[in-house]
Length: 236
Image 1 (cartoon, rainbow, N blue to C red):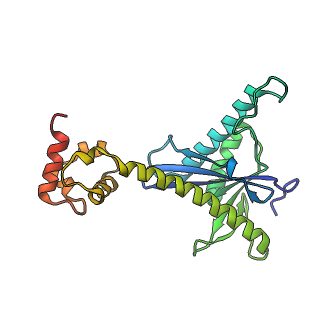
Image 2: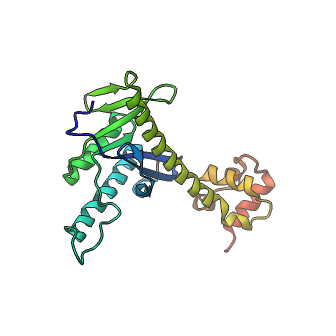
């Protein structure tokens, strides 16, 4: 279907997950000979953007992954006695699959071009019910509805990449909510703390907020808003 020279023994699938402008992460799920190779999975925290930008995030994760591979190849050279063992990113895939349409494919392709790496890329697209429907490459979309074996494989790859990215996103979100300077404010429990962090995005933004800004948060009364303002603007 993709016009490859042979069956893709190693497939790497990438997905982006974020909570608005925070916890922007990416997953790299790996399938070898059609089966998930979980020890090969990798996860990334996106550094280049603090806004929701799937294209830029996808480019960053692929750039970092491939630069690691290039560096490890230089560092280790050809395997042999006394030489370093292959690094975590030394294996290159036969096929890269990205969660998304042609825009994601083109964004990934630009990274390949910049790094002078030649690996086939396709996008995994979903229908209106958010179910995997096919693959996309420059110039065409491949409908998998007539090939249930291929559809099941692509679905499992796409679901696994999504699961792994979402799992990391939730872990970081839970970590952000679990410990905070807000714990020092009397009357701010887990529910209000979560609402404040969701509304402002960070403690730094709370330091710049006024009383009215705090009161605009669900569950924050005027007296509590004044207490929060005083807390963040008192000498600390």
